[in-house]
Length: 288
Ligand SMILES: [Zn+2]
Image (cartoon, rainbow, N blue to C red; front, side, top):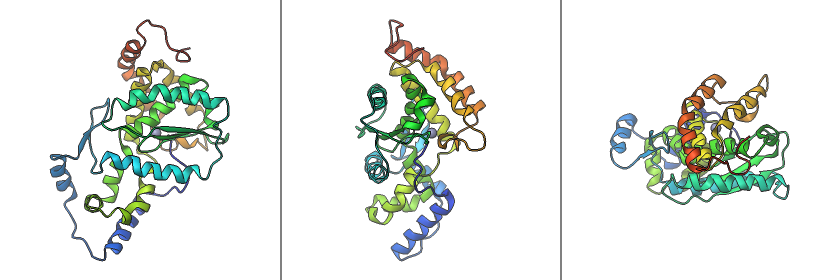
């Protein structure tokens, strides 16, 4: 699930970023052996271990930049929407986030700037968490989530993207190693505008979606929500497909692949759930 505004295509955008950047710098760059450089840097300090999955991700940007760039995009996005924070459903949104955030925060080395708003938009079946922890839930997704545990499925998934740092990982991949190195060296202003789009508004790839599913399942379990809720939720989402699938399904993995992965991970998730609820009694709203 991604923000709707200003959607752009990956390759042309990355190319344009590079072109704009080179023009701004006023000189041509010698093509790099990016893969070679990536491997070399990976051996230094740029590989980060992804929570729960253990995947080694190559990310040249410091995690503090996730917060800064995400906050910038959040401000821009919220300026164009109508908030529904006084609605009764907003209290449920905050309950879910209050339980998921400690589980997520335990997985990352710096404190994210967690924040959530409910957006009044009954036609939009969507939710997202930007790099650095800024979140939104659209009222249009609430009939599909049905209850608190269903919302925990969605927000666990979205927070999964953020703590796996998918935005800045993609920026590292798409903008190019040399440009990112220059960015780290201090040329932030040259790249900031393009970076916002690369970080926030492109659809995720299929592998990132499956990884967010994996992380989200474990987060909801550790937050005391029954992870078995995830399967019927994604089945409900899939049933909304057809000719005009909801925003959040537009780039997601096939239903079959998604459900198969969730089921394969369920024993581990249930162990985490039971550890979080040792009496076997789920917390309020977590089980049906
Ligand atoms: Zn996603």
